[in-house]
Image (cartoon, rainbow, N blue to C red):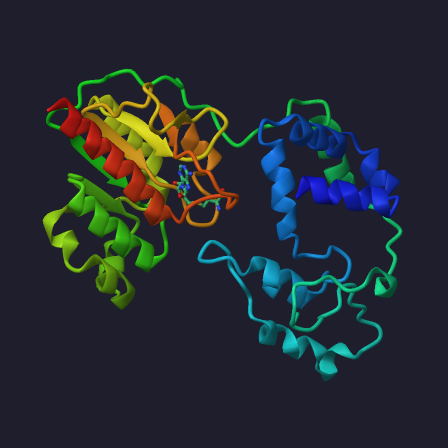
Length: 314
Ligand code: SAH
């Protein structure tokens, strides 16, 4: 989106943005990225108009959000009450209009757009933070995995633990359980075992969980769990797209015999503080434009590769 923001900022002459050092640096980083071409292609997907769609309904349930299970959409009717009598009091100014549910994803014609001055007034504390970060190197999603190179190569008699404690969608948990059982995962962890009682879970898992060792590891305890496993000789691997991930399918990508594999949340992936608990991350190379796979699809791909390595070595 940086490319689009930058284009708009220039088009509307939002000079406070285009002269903001942080904004400039982010834009430069995107321009210099090896993914630049893909970012450019992704511009076709523009569906959010930063001025015309900047209403409660536009922000929280706009069509730009309707992209699967990874985003939380607050339905338009949740905001209807805001138009009620209580809000007609002129002394209670509301800065953001409620808006209407967008019928199409096309932004309104530019003639009809309210012009925005482009002035951004930061809270003093925010301004302080911005001043500090504008000189720091830009943090890419990643990566303090303590080492980026996988080491052990012996995969015989594999012992694979899959940590699915960050997932909260019961359909996804059901799918992960099923593919884990099929691909020979030994232990599977969930944030709460109560998920297995839901109809969403059972409809997909088809009792696969009965053949797995299911362990409850609440998400706040994942870091401790990973440390405990690493102390017991496991290599902790994250399934995540980061700028330092090892690419699945490359020679370097070998899953050691004792591997504990962490899946990310549906919405945000693996949180930064947990990336620091991992030995390395694995990324599934993608050909298309869509940013990421659904987590259970990604789990299936990586578990198959772990099996393939085991079979190849047998
Ligand atoms: N929307 C979030 C993450 C969603 S994907 C984001 O883009 O940051 C959810 C999880 O699926 C990820 O945390 C990761 O575990 C897995 N995943 C999806 N696509 C992947 C890929 N190409 N390589 C590695 N992991 C992937």
